[in-house]
Image 1 (tube, helix red, strand yellow):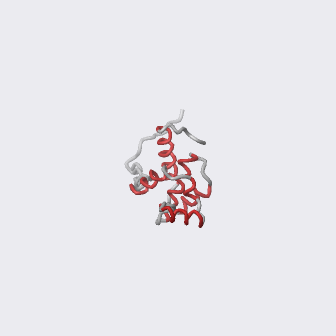
Image 2 (cartoon, one colour; image 1 turned 180 degrees about the horizontal axis):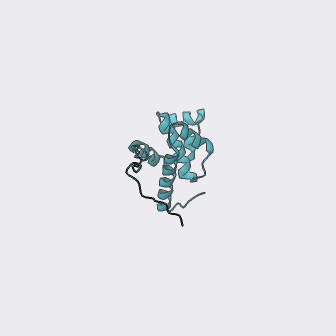
Image 3 (tube, helix red, strand yellow; image 1 turned 90 degrees about the vertical axis):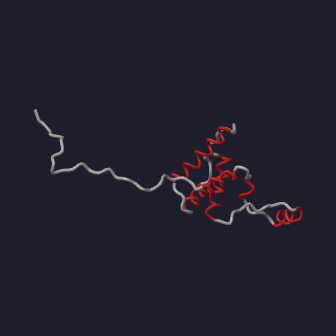
Length: 128
């Protein structure tokens, strides 16, 4: 019968646990506000308005441009609008743009989970 001594000798010390100082991935308060406001935007806010629509909006004093000045926040808004309307079934191009703006895959999951939870509570059900 063989015997294996699993106790550590004084010459060897136990490895130190690795500590990560990075905060868990999430969004800033203003980014969550953009996600919340995106709930009110329709899919039409994602397409570029025509000259006739712009003229009509100017004539009747309606606001037509919902795009945000910050490109990072605009990409977040566009993905959030798609997620509010289609759930997880968003175009890959929207996810690629999201990642290209510096957002992580973890943040993508947090975004979808948050929107899904809100949609479920609101009784809108889940899509895809």
